[in-house]
Figure 1 (cartoon, one colour):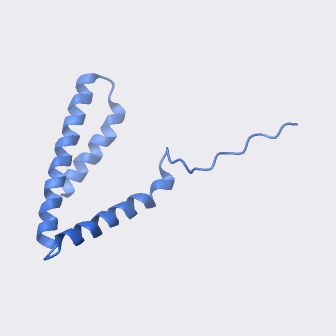
Figure 2: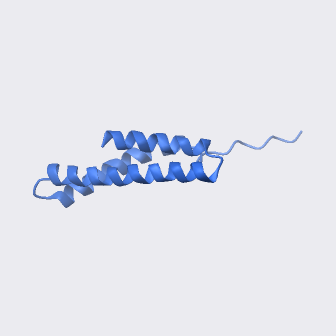
Figure 3: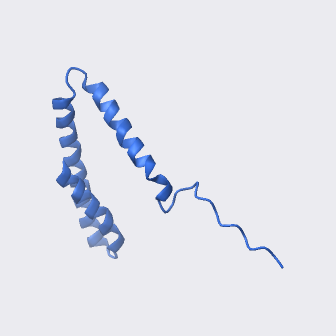
Length: 91
């Protein structure tokens, strides 16, 4: 599962360097393959660790991921709640 996350990280960073259609297709394909492998690994993890209530474990796992992602939202470049700088004062 960690390897798939590393591949997804590299492909997301690679999208910045894409300047042609064939390279975009390659990077997008690698990203989707890593995402599919990650989903399969996550399903196996939930089945093994979830115990008798895998749905409850999946819900807790999803909540933890969402909270972790939202903690970093203020530092995201396009976050909508970022304060705008004050306009210059006319003299």
